[in-house]
Length: 333
Image (cartoon, helix red, strand yellow):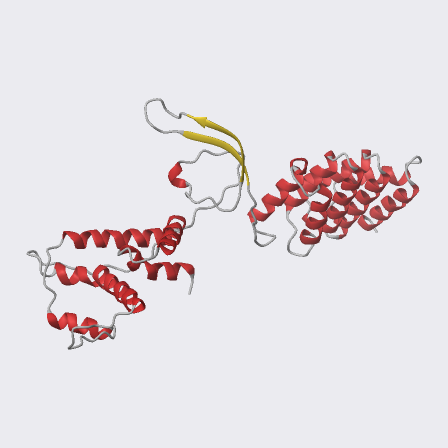
């Protein structure tokens, strides 16, 4: 049974205040966070309110006897009735459910105006859950924030705000550090954007960019996972990172991604081949461009001219010159 199913079965008890304090708190907490259960709970409360506006009528003895028989509670002839707590709880739940779901139809039929039921097509209203937003800052009304603080979040830089001198509203502004885990497929746009942000902004977070690239290479070099946004982020690392080890890992990852590299990424490879001070980065850039050609990507004239220049450049690394010649031969066998 799912948590929502369990909570909905508990709503009659919650309505009649038959839950213990811990269960009541858990139920209200779930209802506040679950839009579908919140809508269900509002329906229960509205039905309960409508029942309160109906005139009080004596329940016919036959109806009462059938109800007691249906829950296995016969009426003994003696004056003492065994009534265990579990039985009482079950009876209250079923009684509340009957009052809310069935009682309205029964009692409404005894009002002065007859109740008319019109047949309407069945509909299902899907309530999309609120999506978690990753943002630098935000302003939230108190009604949108759960009053329950979970775990031990790190709240710092607190300031107190009088939001409007004309009303009684107040504001509390703070920075918060909390632990969030996001799961999904590598091709999910949310995962792609999150990892791109990590690659491009590692200086503000841990782990190191080098470790992040290792993980990205293991994940996004697999067939079917390659994404141009990840390749573009790696291209920016290749252009801007001051650590040669990180640049080598970035260009090695681009090499393995092959045809998934975007045009902007190919320009980053050409720039690295032309001017990166580390020969290992330049060699990896040649290999990545050659891999692009083998995967079916057509290299433009500027790329071919750069490969030709490197293949004959006398002051260039000898191994790089060989690799540039091999790359040209793969384009023009």
